[in-house]
Image (cartoon, rainbow, N blue to C red; front, top):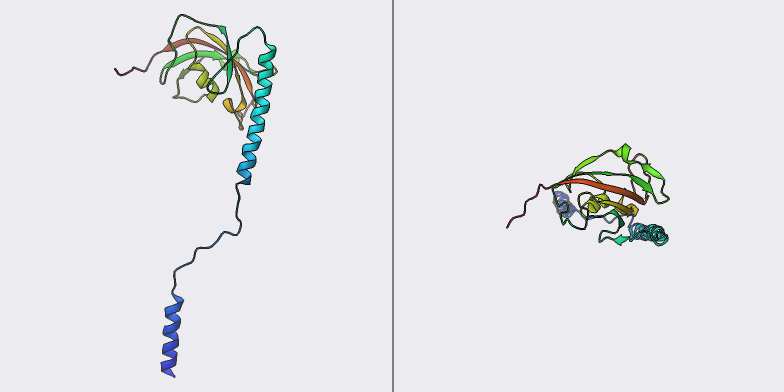
Length: 183
């Protein structure tokens, strides 16, 4: 009897020690949420770009330029002599306003005041960061930014809501070169 108990306990001890098995998830998620989000964002972008193109088409007084970054702009005052534009680390002094696509002022230039900004080293919404890199001292440019180039989904937590495309008039006063190029 003792032999049988000893055999059974050894048998149970031997077979009860096994490696843990990986558990399978109860719910399996497909990529449907991401696919829906991509589809929704594509539709939103198409609607915003259609509104911007309508503004451009009805404005026969200005010649709009499409940027590589996905926004449009036209010069109100252009410097065709200088070749100096700000680069990474350069400090610029500028002023700007922000309007919605209907032309309603969200922030005027007095509210924002003159801004001193180190290119790509400080916070500024993406479209304006990229737009400043196109400018020369003394130029005034009007930018049309789709929401993904402006404040996007989150807005500015103040006057600019979710997914609002913007118009901004920017005046660049001064570029102070900080970067030096290696030869």
